[in-house]
Length: 349
Image 1 (cartoon, rainbow, N blue to C red):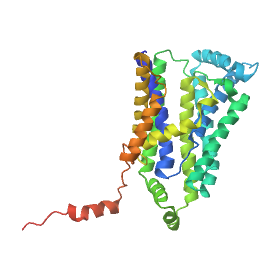
Image 2 (cartoon, rainbow, N blue to C red; image 1 turned 180 degrees about the vertical axis):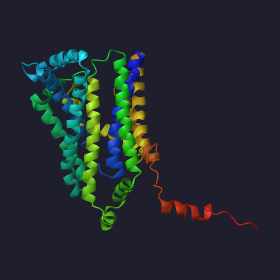
Image 3 (cartoon, rainbow, N blue to C red; image 1 turned 90 degrees about the horizontal axis):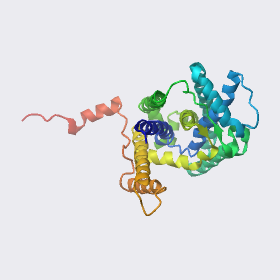
Image 4 (spheres, rainbow, N blue to C red; image 1 turned 45 degrees about the vertical axis):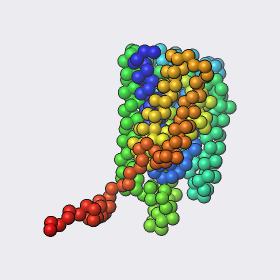
């Protein structure tokens, strides 16, 4: 494999997983809300690209689409991409518009999905969110005008105006920059008074309510933020892959992101960096073994076995994850620590 393409593949996928892990860590790690519909909000971003990039591109170029969308989307995606060679402004529009639609749409769906969280226990809430995730996927799979149903939909190459290999470098830089900005925002949020309120609700919801915190409002806010973040990851993923298929967004995607959060460290922003790195390292190692070594068994599912064993070991030996959550340092706690006996300088005899 070309070293540049290998680096771009790793970098873009890592960026997507960092965004997803950050969003779930905000919801589950900080607030204790088990969002098992993460793949649905991830899909909303990808479906926005699949549904809009070709249609918007042909509309702006004055091209009339003929035939069924499920059969012609790839053809028109190629046609629009060829036209973008001389129109970088249109390429930027075709990236920004689906992104601007996907984020508020996912945030709105996140708010709607948060209403059951006000009445259900965590186990029942988890089952309901799994059902919600499957509803989104099944609707997209069976309503073919959206993203082509089982055929999938082609996606416009919005960077077609940049010649390769510079195009791959720009895509990597763009994905990495967006992922870093989202992770940094999550980091600052986690270290802010808002983040401390979320952890207070997670640790003792009743006490937080008694102290005047609106738990319902906090849950809706966090679900909206986390869902919007996941939609950004879906947009980047769809543009990178170049196509969208509803069957790519099964519940296994949610469990995979949850695995990254648990392995990386729940409630610690650095866990959202460590978890995806661990998964990609294991997955790419398996791919390397599969490609270059002749084994007497099929290693396709070896990464799931290895990650499953790693999850069991971490839960048993280090349940807080590789990067455990650190207690928030506030002024009162810092003063108590400074004035504690073990930090007091002994008096001379």
